[in-house]
Structure formats: structure tokens, C-alpha cells
Picture 1 (cartoon, rainbow, N blue to C red):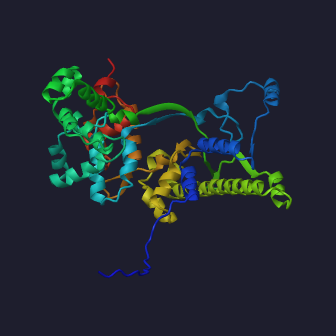
Picture 2 (picture 1 turned 60 degrees about the vertical axis):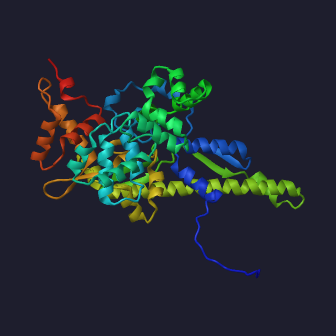
Picture 3 (picture 1 turned 180 degrees about the vertical axis):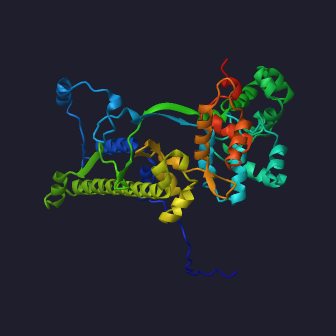
Length: 448
């Protein structure tokens, strides 16, 4: 037997997630308010950070000024960018299961056909996250084979929240168990065959059927009860939030100018007192080491916040450039646009764009819009041009506003009207878009 020691050099590529990179990605993903909270938290832990808030209101002077001012009808006052508080910036934020799943599936490396199938399946889910539609009907409509359908459905079932895309309650719970790494044959049998016994609290019957002690039976059922039978509801969030725009868009001499919103922001700088201690040769070595550590942390935070600001501004400028028709003529003229398109134009990774638009807002001549608003899928019109789903939703909303309330338009009628205007949209798609707009069905809109 021959034992030889040899030295070999191998070359490989690895992505090392440094602390600096982690913080940079974390801060980019934050909203403006979250960044300010992060700055406050860091300043409490790091004595080298000085935080000043720009644009503080002198309430005493403000109240005195109000007493002297003349009463003015708010409806006669145009928007003034110098206003400290604008009620239009208080919006109702709502998120649903469909938007949440679209964002995730767009980050998957799938073919164009697979993405289309996945989005159709997502549109077919109910609000609880289940696929109640007959899968054979979807296969026939999309003219695909069963294997491709199953492959796309499996991709959706890997998305968050865990359990979406299931065809029944048992499958929903099984998906969640698999994602949590729970593998137990007895538990799987109970989920697949005896959920009705659990609903009736027939623990003794279950323990007898599977020949196990009652306590073990209770423990297994308690695991099932930690799972969510309606995963789609986790994404149905509605709350009122105060929004600060990250960027502002203004029309100046027929051009749209984008600039960062620095108003009411936290201004951070390094405390000079500690710099002097670091320069002092008589200072204690441990003290110097502590100050160096905190100085590096403070410098890194400032650098990452500046990087976030620069990235968001670049993304906003590219959005405005791509959606110029929207800024000139309004919502109906919004174009289909993907995060992938912006990523290619800026030479960024698509995940950077996703973080850069998450929770970011833009103040425009038409009001406040979330960055995500400008990203939508497309449908082809009869003249081979593409129309964005956002634009189609606007058309559907406008047609319902103008309808005869005693004879409201059905989804099928709206689909036919849009087809006459050169836009082919399925009745099912019209129904989904109408529901996304929060508009009731024609039978429920009817006035007598």
C-alpha cells in the first residue's frame, strides 16, 4: 500500500455573501420609512453616527402662521411640493395572492411558454390559494400536454406561501409538510384519508385505526393543526400606511425630470469627536480598536444608503423613459414592461431590480404610484401591438363606470366590447381583472 502526499491547486468560482453585501441587499429592499428606522437603530448602537432630520417642522411657528392665514378652499389649491403633509400620500395598501405569486414566478428560469402557463394557473387559483378549476379544462384551453401542466403546477407549489396551487385540502397540507421537512407515513395517511375524523375530533377512532397510543395520535394531529388550510389568505393584507415618495417626477419644459426625495430624510454623518480620539497617539489601544470597528460600520452604512439611493434613481429614470406615453397621456397608455427589461437596460441582475422596486414610491403629475405599478404582463391586440394588463384593467373599470346600472355589463359582454376595439381578452381574464379591481359581478352590481 502506497501513501503519497501531494499538493494540488484547483480553481473554482464561488459567491461569497459578505457582511457588506448582505447589508447592501437588505437596505436596497427596504422602503424609505424602513431605512429611517434602520438608521435610528444603528445610531443607537453606534456612537460615531450623528443623525439629523432634515425638514423638521417648527410647530410653534406653524400654528402662529395658521392663525394669521386666510381660510382657503383646499379644492382650489394645486399640489405644492413644499407642503409638509399631503393627504394624498396616505394610501390604502393592499396586496393579494396573485401579485405575490407573479413576482416570485418571474424570478424563475423558465421558458416564455412555461411562464405563460404558470401565470394562467395562478389566475385560476381562488383567494384561498387552491386550484379548483378542472385541470383538463386548462390543458385543453392552453393546448398543452399533461406533463407540461404538471411541471408548471409543481413550480407554483414551490412558491410562498407554502401550500398554494393545491387541488384539495389534503394536497395543500402535504405540500406544507414536505416544505417543512416533515416525513411521517402515518401522518401522511391521516392527512390523505382521515381529515373528516380530525374535523369531528374522533381521536380515539384514529388511534384505534392506526394502532397507536392516544397521546401519539394527539401529537400527530397537533402537527396538522399548525398547518394553514387557506394559505392564500396570508397574502390578502389591507392596511393604511403613510407613504413617502422615494423619487419625484416633474415635467419641466416638456421633459420629465426625476430626482430623489431628500425631504424629511435622516441625514447621517460621522462624529468628529471620535475621529480626534483615533488620531490621538495617547489614546488606549482597546479604545482605538473599538472606534475603528464602529467607524467601519458607520462608513459602510452611509455607503450602502448612498448606493440604494443611486440604484433607485436609476431604476426610476428607466421606468420614466420606458413609460413616457403614460406620463404624457395617462393610465390607458401604460406599456407592458418586465423587471427583466429594466435589468437588461441597466446591466443589473433581475433580483436587484426586484429589491429596488419593492416598497418604493414615485410622486408623479398623476399622483403617487408604487414602482411595481409600472410592471405588467401584456396581451396582443389585433394590430400585433402589445397592451399591458394594467391598461386593460383601466379600460374594464372605465366601461363598468359608464354602464347602465339597471343592465350592467357581464364579463362576456366586456370581453366582446374589448374585442371590437381590437383587444382579445378571454371572459375568464376579464373576471380576474374585475375581481382584482374590487368590482362585484354584474348580478351584484344591478340596481332596481
